[in-house]
Length: 65
Image 1: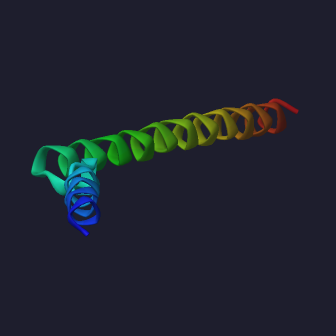
Image 2: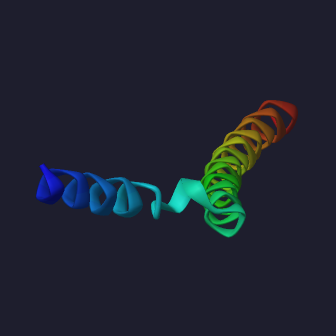
């Protein structure tokens, strides 16, 4: 019984040491999530700019005809 109690405390202690259990860990997780979102937005922005460039080229070609 005593060993079970000790193992239970050890398990609970180790489970409570996760990244989401401390303010620093939660902040790190938020920063990582924000960085992923920023990278996604940069990729979307590049795709939009590429599309706008192609549309502009097509419009310029139509104007010169």
